[in-house]
Length: 110
Length: 114
Image 1 (tube, each protein chain N blue to C red):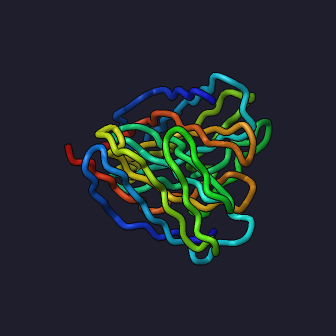
Image 2 (image 1 turned 90 degrees about the horizontal axis):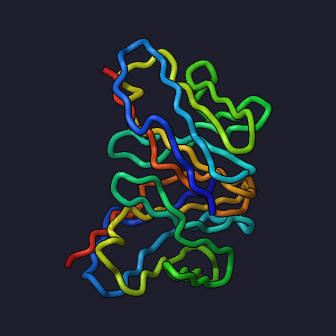
């Protein structure tokens, strides 16, 4: 499985945008880019996913580089509830086996 | 979407015993998975629970230690056998409707082995 690299931690002020980067230089053409987050004491929850084009949903936006070797999860306005560990995961198996890396712990400062 | 519940939510067990964790999904799903999250760590996939056949285990996990059942499309169990303190972890169940669909996770079962 292709590997992803994320910063261990990031901080953001409340109500400001947050850009969470993910590098995946060994991504293959069939790998989907998934983002999940895990709030404290909860199971992970889906945030967004994409293949080539940028994606938007009610939670976030996903910006994918043209060469697909990196992507950025964008939270447009961070709230305290967004404090979580964010995982960037590649899945190219078609079996949806998610191999979690270490993720980025996002702290939101009031 | 799918709502997933797990039982028990937490347990404290003695070394050498076994614990079966149940995972119930509120709708029929194609795929179910079991993960382990050791203290302070990320999630590690244990196995894919296959309906009506043996589970598919990831490297480092074996059926004798983690037997899994999936009798139907909405239910699965994971047994942690002959437990040792190293098995103290959160065990999470997840499910998805299709291989490329969103994966939904249960709240986890926090296991402590003394």
